[in-house]
Image (cartoon, rainbow, N blue to C red; front, side, top):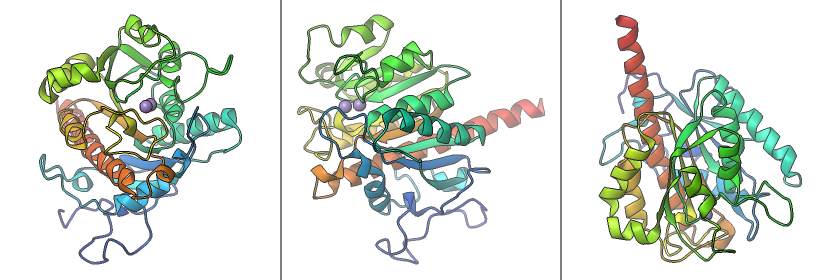
Length: 329
Ligand code: MN
Ligand code: MN
């Protein structure tokens, strides 16, 4: 890392060994106030939207611990996020483990504050429902596009009668609310048995580009990257990474595993292929540590967070450069 930068820096593993100290995301300092940060990393320790196996509420703490394994420079892109963006751990979003509606409100409020302070959010879930209130906070003024890694479309309509808010519905709600542009959305890795034959049709009818896992394996990583870049284009884009998009061999610690997914290496290559897009936020969700006593799912999740952090920092730098160029003209 550049010595002279005044940006917040992670605690160095060359000074304090990485198993020591207080666990924060990427060993960054904690900020009570997000003002002045370019990228705010936070946790949403909540799994009240889970329809089957709960446990993702324990995700943020496990991800903080595992993120201590991350160093500072991406070994392929050579992006050094802490040199080019002010990054910090802004703690966990307040939640209410026994009230879904209260929690949704709290999450939106927390992310509205980060958004208002000019921060790009990078979030550790939590179940996938948290992406909805995050989008309510950051996509109010204009819809975002999305690159969505998942085994599930998360565009189901209702559960248990008339319940419209679960971790299987966030993107249907986000599209209905005008927060997410379906024509600029791509879902990668979709698979698994359905409740009904037409379960996944709604999203495709809205214009979502759905890449089922069979097509992923047919096309290969490079062509999938090309397709993702074509779909989201130059507009503001969110990355949502559900760890169950990965094969459960790599990420067993999750509530709704589906066999036959892509590998961690393939996911990393896909994420790296998104460099240069106008990225405005990202999350890694559905890490449920109780289902993985080895702790590996948290290592996988933390590594994907670092991959996304590098992309977000690069996007921040690109926007700053562009703004500077405009000011000069
Ligand atoms: Mn999901
Ligand atoms: Mn999923």
